Image (tube, one colour):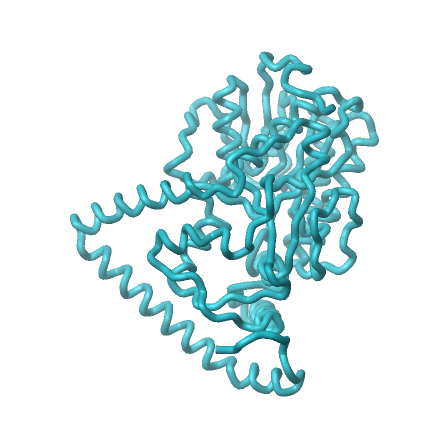
Length: 406
């Protein structure tokens, strides 16, 4: 059995350092820690505003800056009992393709934080990793945490997180710092920007889907379940080297049956008045387009709509076992793969927007023109790459089987 809340002085208050505390997950975690009466210091370059997260920032030691700034890093770790390292560079898009920056922040930065934690006497270190360290090109089902790391990475970001995760787990062997790594897969929740808001923004113009595995199944990481895992892992690590979590990685996704990779998001399509995609594009074609978009990013710094790794996350079945997390620190996710609160959030948001439009009709006009300009830009871009795509498809021959190209 893992260490539980009642095993390790649950009523005692602690001081926590949250590196990456300005983002969505960091703020959800900070809110929960404050509600329990703990002290919190947070370091981030930007502290975003989320209307559904209520934090009394006067109770938080807010430090604006980079984890690479040694003085600010020392400041946030001063007097901390434990450190949650949630910060990373290149989680998606073109940034994930930047080898120099991802290595600097994710590898060298993590090494620096580990070093400073030991020097500051911080006892526990919880690191947010990614399923990208064990998934890349091939289907995985109910993958245990003991599965080997992938050896071929589709993005520098995934490779940098793999190297950093190894550093974190190795640090536990020194006996000075109890550590663990939590591997996440697509955080979602009300107001979350990377997965949830991105899906909302794409609903109105997503007219086609693509799959390599049929049906394509996966699991996502609910924000509340993820912060539950972070807190339970920290509680377990209070036992130091005796903690079953010490020095181990864990998959942290929602429980229950896996969900359809795209179908999971259909409630948001319905909310936006958009129909689910009616057409299916060959996976190989989408993968090739993603490769081309990556090339355009490297040459012209044009932000890619999708990378090859993101294509695989959406097109290939990838599911993960959470049994180790249940066993070692009592992870018990709730409201699994439930978008009810997220849908309610966007319904409330739309009502507020309607009120603003009634007061200021210019807002609606501006929104319409933004959409028109977007589609014009997309049309120009697609028309410019069609000749290259046609030539590439002709060279590689037939693309996929059992697909209908619209």
